[in-house]
Amino acid sequence: MKPKMIVLTGAGISAESGLRTFRDSDGLWEGYDIYEVASPTGWEKNPSLVQDFYNMRRKDVMAAQPNAAHTGLAQLEADYDVRIITQNIDDLHERGGSSKVLHLHGEILKMRSELDERTLYPVNGDIRMGDLAPDGGQFRPHVVWFGEAVTMIEPAILEIVQADVFVLIGTSLNVYPAAGLVDYLRPEVPKYIIDKKIPPVKGNGFHLIEKPATEGVAELVRLLKEDLQP
Image (cartoon, rainbow, N blue to C red):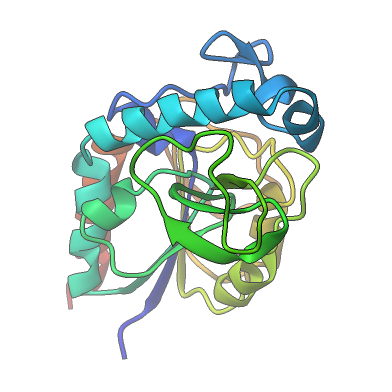
């Protein structure tokens, strides 16, 4: 039985692949007000704007490549049962080689009817207004908007409580309920944080690696190898 490593990732891990984040900003993402393009209210007010925004994000994701942080985490599967919990909507963890990835906030390369959040369909092109699901509802991105329920939080908690090692990468811990996941860790679990700017965390015992994700994962791999030495 390999030790179970739970890795919680945020926008910082994809930033080095060229995907922009709205973290540390003034509420704008690519020049758009977040709530105009990432909320049910924005969808009701101007669905075409929302579709266009996510169509652009989808193109960005498909053009991006996994970086050394993504591939480094995948390589850790040789020694650990690595479970990725990501707040990101891109597929860079999967393309980087990780086999177990849970997306808290949805996936940009999937779509669903606005009437049914459970039935998902793959999408790698644009979603147009008038593209209807079999149930007659307008297709929309499979992305959790502000104000919508994060239905994957319960499965994520079930992973967190079983962690033997925990790693936090590239997230400011500002977005709930994802930020509350660290509260479910058992006290004795070794905990690592990788970030250019370490976020505030409650409790002790965190090993802080204040570096970008690519450099930080390389250091994590070195530290873990030392720990595994007999």
